Structure formats: structure tokens, C-alpha cells
Length: 574
Image 1: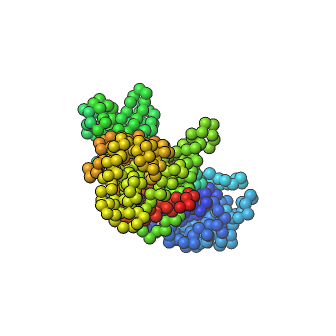
Image 2: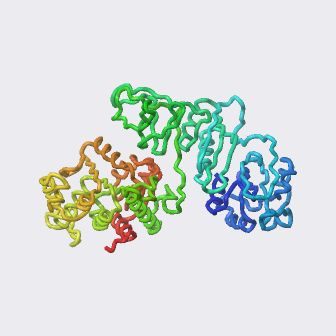
Image 3: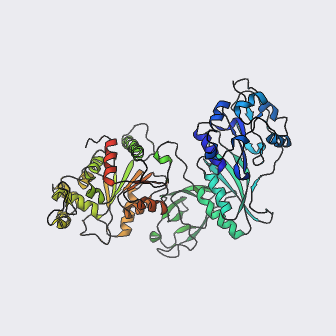
């Protein structure tokens, strides 16, 4: 974990790794790593101002000149670690100086500190001057073992690719192996030179039994590990309607691929806790709910030929770059709300570009829709006007809610109350408890929500704004609903289907003041969709994250305050 955090710090500081000036670093707990960093001595010294935060020991840093390294064997490099050489980049000039002809600062190369031998570290030189290469003799691979390794242990080789360093994916994989009583050998590792470059690692996983090895491989697969010798996925026909094969593969909400006929295929409509249905001609894979399976459907079983792409840290430095942060009511909200507003601006502009033929600049990865999932507390607390303005201004394109939000919104339009409480008077109204029932009755008489708005019965509010701006609404009912309203879907399977149908194109999800709908929506969203959960109760965003939606960001605040601040950040004058 220490080396990955340290490399992340270099990457965040804008210093490329894998090239140029190198440093050897000894970590605590007797774990020693070596990697390259390109920077001048003054810049290097600035990176070690806070050694405790990254686990670095400043006094353990040693440097060796580039032009001397080629003459040094691995043994002499080991002696260089013990040598009382310079302990700070600024002191290195007087001890070992080798100036690059094209640079104005001394050049240093990494010392072999016993864990990653120099010949195993891939690097690409960015200097034009010729350099002497590392000793290319074979070195033993890196091993991490709490016990004694023997050749009779069950072993499987896996590979990792992508931004595995700055996203701490490599650290998570290695920690998972050790936590499950396994050992590992890093056979090969390449660290990307810059923040944009990908890294890769080949890791041999060892266990004392095939069963334990299978459990370890099962645990590290969600982090993106791929078996070195991949095979096609295995499929079995569904035995009957609504029943999956016993060994079916259960999906996560991360991007997933299956290997079919020696080629990798993306699984469409990815969602957690579903199965994967395969068609051979043409080759395709798509998630399928258990209840929708038909007898004879080919279902992926086991984990062979399946790979998962872990969620990497976004390039943008906004609130969504720090997903799964701890939920706290004491954290300032202004910066997060500003980042949410900025993303809503971008999605609205991207939607306009997608809908305009010949318009340049459309970004398919950004999305074209903002999904809003709301509860009735929005109306009770006074967020109705701000939410209506967001809809009418084109910032919200899909609305998920239940019977209550729509009923109390239209109650406010007809009676000026919400659950019988006067929104302007600030006190309960006489016989106010009847108002939402009378509202539901009148709308049922009108036939649909759309007819109620077009006939003039409902003149303002959230529902009226959705109807006038063609915003899709999915109203999922529950067992406690009064009425319900005519457009409420009372069949839960039909409601799930309607929600899934509205999700393609969603680039941002706002879950505000609702627990059940927030968790239901979070289970349907792919992990790549940034999600913001807002509730006055900190247990709601915590529960959402615990249920698997780890990409969500929690804001503990009043729903009406959030909507007003968000609308004001987008230009609302109310």
C-alpha cells in the first residue's frame, strides 16, 4: 500500500514516474521498493516535505549517478544502500555528480533496495543524451510471503492493466491475497511514465490448496485481474422459465466482458446482481434479471472467461474524483454542490450537441441525461420551486419517484398545503389531512397526470414542469400508497423494467430525500455513473454505499437547502 500511495503522490504532483531521475526508497515494515521519478533535485526535495503521510523515511533515500550505474553490479548497488551517501537531493551534487548535457540539473538513477531489481523495472528515457543501461542479468522475482513458499503450492498467474497505481488497485489486490492466507510473486511490472499512461503487472498467486486459490481468485476478480491463459466462458441453458443454472455468474455494476469464440465482448446493460445471457449468432452478451429468463437461454456460469474493469479515479479534480468518501454532516457542502452544478451544465450542453445534427463536440462518455430521484420531503421542506425551476431550465431529464411526491406536489398546487400543512402559513390547516386524498381523487377523475396538467387542473409544480418539458417520469408505487395516482406503477417488476428503460444515457444521478427509491435506483445504475445521495439522515447515504453503490457521494443536509443552493449555482434568482 505504501509504494502505491507514494507513486500516487508523485502522479498527483505532476511528476512522471518511470523515467529520468531515480530514487531508491526504503519503506517501513521492512518492505522495500524502488521506482523512478523525473524531476530536478529541488522538486524532489519538495515531494518529501511530509514523509509520514506517504510512509516514506526521508533519511533512507540514496542516489547514484547515471554514468556510474552501468559499471555497478547488483552487489555493488546493495553496498550503495548501506553506504553513507547523500540523504537529500540537494546534497548529491557534492557526492556523486553527473550532469546531463541537455539538462541543467544533476541526473540520478535508482538504487536496488532489495525488492524490485533495476532490471525488472520498465522505464522509457526522456533524455536525448545516451545512457548506460541497467545490468540485464536475470533477477529473482519479487515475493511476498508470510510463510515459506514451496513449489508444490497451487499457483495461478494473473495480470492487471490500467491505472493500477494511482487508483490503488494493485495495493488492493495484493492486500486481498495476503488477507486470504495466500502469497504472491510479482513476475513483471511496468509503471506508466505519466498520469495518462497505463501500468501493468503480472502476478503469480500461490495458495496451499486449490480451494483456497479459487477463493483468492474469486476475491480479486472485481479488481480487474485476468487469468494469464484465458479461456472462453462456460455457458449452460436455463432449465426453465425464471430459473437460472445453479452455477450462474452474478454480475457487479462494473464494466464486464466475457470471452466468447476467442474474442472479448462487452456485457450490455450492466447492473449488479443479474445474470449474463449469451447469443452465439451474432455474438452478444447482455444482463438479464432472474425473472425474465426463459427456458433454454444460454447463461454464463462460473468465472472462467469473465473479466471485470475496476472503477478508476477520474481525471477531473472535482468531488467525483473522491468517491466513497466518509459521510459527515460537518463537511462543507458548497464545493461539492458547485461541482454537481458544473457537471449538470456540461450534460445539458452535451445533450444539445447530441440532438443537433452536425454539431461538434459531443462526448458519449459524459451522458445526455440527469436523473433525479426524489421523495415527498422535498415538498414538505419547501424545495418545490427550486426543483421545478431545474426541470424547466433543462437541467433534469428523468424523474423517479413514488406516489407521495407527485400527490403532495399537486396538493400544493390545489390547496397550498403539503400533507395538510400550510406551506405559506407555516401551520396545520383545518381538515388539511384530507387535502392529498381530495387531490388524488381529482387527478384520477382527470384520467392521467398529463390530462390533469393540460386541462388546467394542475397549474404549477414539479409534475406540471415535467409534463410541459417532456421529462420522463417513472412513479413506482408501494403497499402503503393512498389512491394511488393513475400513472403509478403498482407492479414491482413492471416498475423495475420502466426504470431500466429510462437509464441509458444517464450521466449523473441525484438521489434526494428518499431511502427506498435511492437504494433501488443505485442497484440499477452502472458504477460509471456519478451518483449524489442527499439526505438529512446520514444513515441513508451510508446504507446506499453499503448496498454496493460505492461510487455514490453522500451529502448530509436538508433536501430543500440542497436544491436551492444547486439552483442558485445554476442561475436561479429565487
